[in-house]
Image (cartoon, rainbow, N blue to C red; front, side):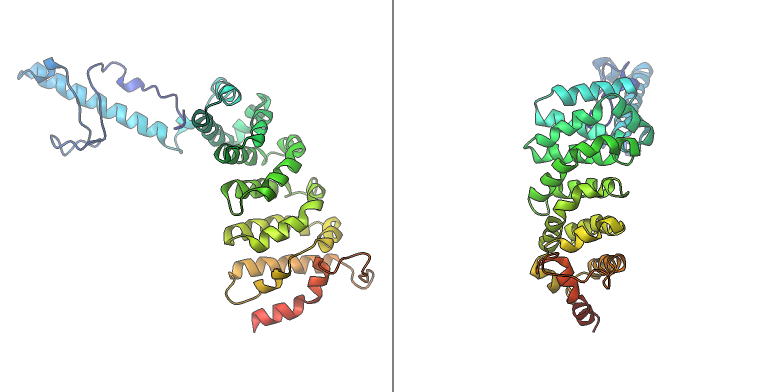
Length: 312
């Protein structure tokens, strides 16, 4: 099931006396499968009939090997499950308590959630809520796989409406997860998808400071993912004041040095530029009551100096 198929191989169903392994077959260098084949005793008889039987057994084993490889391929049509099969996988996700089985079922479900026509089916079967329950698990692998599935489902606008009730939980999990972990990155990707439009961005208003701290402390991959999320937020003028009030770490200014990845710097500059364009400075003279000294707004007052230093 983890391979995306049922595990049943039709091509070898009538070959009761043949099997294949991953060993090299020195007997026949032209055999594509390079498999050792076991033959029934009658297959070794030195007759023409025995030779034909041996050849048939080898051919069946080769077809069986190719069938398994096809099912294991992520690009194979066999990875696309029917609604009935998806229902069985969802039941397995809901009922299984063994992490290895649960992980395998989630991989299958995640692969199918990548297909547009399967997203509606999974949600119609109640799959979104079934997977979302796994956000409470302590197993990081299971949680990551659940976030990947929810991320695939979030591409659909109708699914986003159902996913919004889990945004606060995903946000909390993302911020509190181990820094640069797979769970944290999966959560950031889901939040990024959920904030492509303005509809749910306000739900992250209280977490902007946490995202800036995560950006400052994270590695390059984490930094870039946080920036993608922040880029979504700065496109919405209604989020400008929330962004400017956010408390940013003092280490943010140290990013403007020649050792930092330029892609990170350029995206950060775009964010600052958009915020600056959305904020009417002449109409909103910053005061101590409105914005704290550690806020992004006060940092932006030094922004030009930092930027000039970077481009020298």
